[in-house]
Image (cartoon, rainbow over all chains, first blue to last red; front, side, top):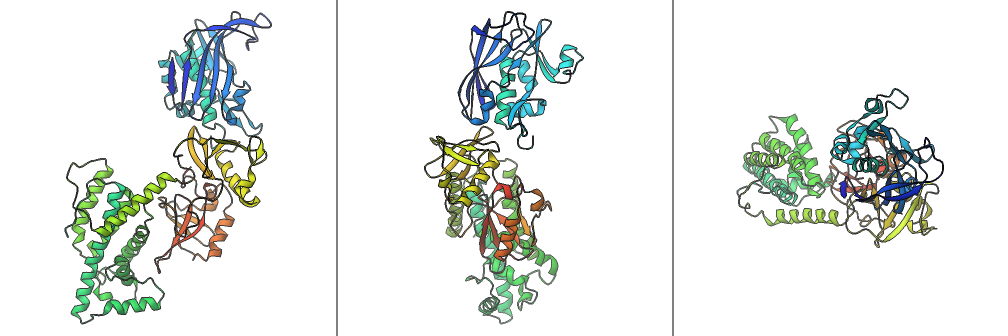
Length: 192
Length: 367
């Protein structure tokens, strides 16, 4: 499936394939490598980034989005090349929630890391209303994590998305906007 | 000749109309002045006034019906022919204010420095209409219709009607000059504008840590000129890419980079093309500025350049002073960053210096 979004395309593979690796979910009961299933998606941008990610389902850990292969791209995307910006999904009943945090350049550390972001910036990068876009690709709701999960903890105010278990499209889009387009649009540089 | 109405409203047509309206206005004002003076026996007034202008070091015009010459004379409080200017004795202050404003706009247009957009055409045609009304010239009636038509174009209306009768040759030639300038801008856009053409093959890397540019790991700084020029050019590139990044260089030295995912012309390895020419390149940006003697002010907002520019403008302001720019002068900037002063006495356009987006009002130059 090919999705055109803002200044990039996302090509999502139809079928998951086996994937061996170590989950980022530290609550996993097993230590070491697990064999999971990965649905890969490849993002190509107008500024020549070509990168491949995978949405991995683990038998004994939460789903996540991880770097599969860096094909080519400008040095401004180097933090992605190193694997920064992985995304973790957490189960909420029959659904899953993930945080919408974006790659932001930090002038002190001189590198990009995940940071809070608002829907206005996300919409500007996606050239669309991100909530509506994610919902049109299967998401259930976008809001604060507390709203979506009922949790009362220190992460309750972080902008998040709720998706049905196994959703691929909304996850791939959200990941692309918050990681790739955030860097393309110089989040943390300029005035933002 | 009857005055037609523009049918398309594109920049080329409006350029031609500017020229045509300008000389029609000049013809009619000349006719009024000349008739008055001939009636009082002053048949050689043009040569006499021209000699006075020459003595004062003012611009000399070959044609008595050039509106800038006539307005300039009417603006002199001590003019010996002021009684001949229609409306001047009745509306002295209004006449002079309108004439001064109109003459300045005409000067910019006459040098081909104004892109004939709907808005900028109206900025010319409305003061022309006001002046024609004060002077009771018949062109006022035609201008009213033309202004309405351009307002309609601006509102998005189109008119399915036959092309108007061709404008006189001189007006068509002016329109062709505007067309050439538009084409030149498309072919060779200013720094900060969208890149035209294919992505160049030569790939180089701008490095934040060393403020250098390298190709396959080797510095190519020397290609940017002497050390001072190279540093200056690289620091301008850093405005676009504060953390560095990859750039591409075309065979003619134009540098392309991706800015927020878009291909942009971000600089030149060598000298910018045509920068050695005396006249300004490209049309003026749609802002007016005044040199205060120690700063530059945006006339519309009242903001000072030194408060808004990203980098220090001390060298720029000092350069204006060294050039001899009179305090209180109006200046313009072309989209290529050429700073231009038009001397309202000699009506000559002077290219003073070149600015980039780091030392100019944010958002006024491309990029």
